Amino acid sequence: MSIVDYLGAVKLGRRCYQEAVLRGQYPYLPALDTVLSYAEVASEVSLGVVDIPLSRIVGTKTEGRTNAFASNFMPLLSDRSEFASKWASLYDYQVSQGIQDPIEVYEFMNRFYVLEGNKRVSVMKYLGAYSIHGNVTRLIPKKRGDSKENRLYYEFMEFYQVALNCDIWFSREGSYRKLLKLMGKRPDEEWSDGDHEVFNSAYGRFVQAFQKFGGDKLNMTCSDAFLMYVEIFGYDTVSHQTEKEMGVSLHKIEKEIKLAASGSPVELVESPEEAEETARKPMILNWLKAVEPDQLKLGFIHTKTAETSSWTYAHELGRMHLDEIYGGRPAPLIRPILRSRWRKLLRRPLVPAAT
Image (cartoon, rainbow, N blue to C red; front, side, top):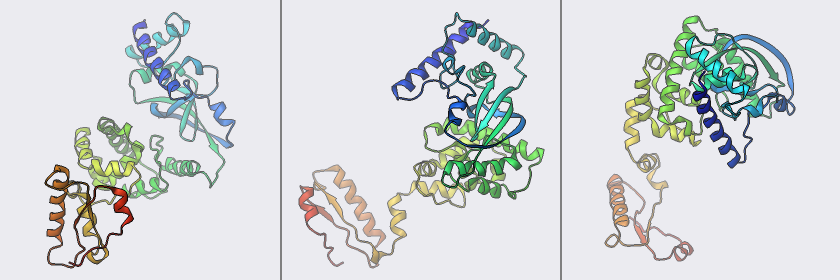
């Protein structure tokens, strides 16, 4: 039995446990029963056996096994325990033959909680698998208009009715219908087997490319990034791209993605080449060209002269470039203002001289 691999999983679990404690977070798996004590469930629906992304499996149904795992589903118990022996046996079985039996899972708000099969999930996560088969019971919360997450979940359920996909999770309302429109689908149009195959394959490649791009460090879901990516490049193109091609294209629109992750509005362009060219231009120039000259008043504030500071000298070059842009047209005065103390400067109004 592969106790060595169990010890490797325990190492990952204890590291996750310690990091959670340092951040003041709960270090074990969350239990759905605890979550439901603060929520209202409207109904239960059986979804049958579903291919569940392991990233969406976040906890257990009851509190019985929570302390056996860290929050990343890696084990915490001693390698001499019966638990360790069973975990190692499951690992060997998965490597040699593959686990086939579906786990028993509850889904709430597109998060999955395991009723039976916690060790199987742990083994599959340790092996880096993408998904696992599970017999799913969906718990539908009462609809509330005052909760954004609740509204997003109801939009997700509409999407699931036609796409049968639980991997897509957006953080912005209206995104599901927007994705369907970009795919050329009506909101109520059920997907064919071919639609499922093409979409799941393309999205799976994008997930890998986005992770290598460093997407897990951005304040956006992978689905948010995928929607933006499809909007720029087109679904037909995206569905035929390789993972490597996606990686290259992601770097072309890196600034746009980071702007979107920060919550700033992003202006989409007609082609990736245009996006790449726009990214090369200084943002201040793009902004200046969008403003009428007689509406704009600019001033450059320096604490040193261009002769004594390379920083000031570089800004002087920029100022002269702006003078060239506005040459021959009515334009505001762009002049350096030299002051040694900011407070004195702020007390005095800046009165542009006539050009």
